[in-house]
Length: 392
Image (cartoon, rainbow, N blue to C red; front, side, top):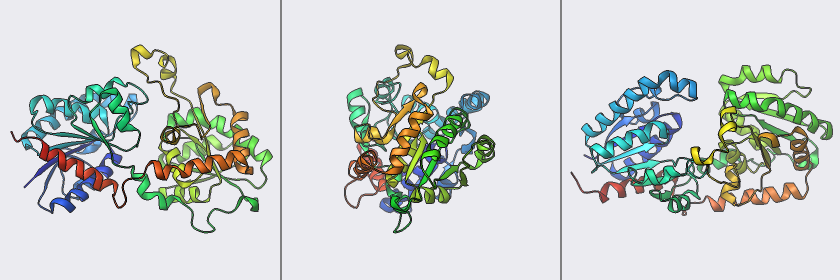
């Protein structure tokens, strides 16, 4: 009976890990022993978790520091448990601050165990030196973005395989059915506003977004503004928009967000995965971001903090290889500039047409071979890694 260890550190990793388990079961049958660290989805499929994943699922510097002693203990506990389990392969899923610390120590203690990484750290954005360091303890890397294999090859990282992004397989949920997104000619424009999914992002962007929307509404009649909010930030957002001259419709939940995307004619968004969701939905957008005050102070210290030289901070732009989507960072985030671009997108014309044409190219750039799903592609790499390592 093969033993497969899968170690995740947060909900998104639990989702990816569970899909991988399903694909492995399709190939290996039900006779697989799974252990590691996972959440409800992975444990529901039979994974024996070494402890509750919530112990290490923390975000933000303050939260990490507060729980650091427990996280360190969980790293060493996980290493001990993986080595004792003698798995045929160890798969680490995202959450690099936790999972990569586990993998490094497993490699030292049990170098015969193949290690597969699932989700590449953003070495193309900052700390590119991590790529070469990873090659010492990650044998195969599963990438969600099509440009990442070339990045790791250039930086001396581990063998990297593009296995597709989970959003690509849910693109139909993001794309409008007939009549769901009204023609611009009907003069009922819908603008989706996404100021971020973290409290710090909301604090930095909400004021500028409010001023921008006031300027847009003055020039675009009958404008409907929809703001999909993360549930735990809903009250904070409602307080923040209370003084806006133009009030948005605030919606919560994944279904409501996707419905808003299917209806939207344009979007104003913070940088992040949401820009890829909007792009796959075919929504032209303007992207803005303000970095944390700490990183703003240090971002010029490349030699110390290894910030990579990137032409864009917007995922669709990086994938497409050009700045099809207007993007503005820090001091560039000016309400008048943002509003001018949004008005152009909402009125129609060359700027809107060009961006929509570029967004359609994403399907080609992110496509896997016909009939090949993300989880199937990932499973095949894991199985190959299991066979390529000699037994202890």
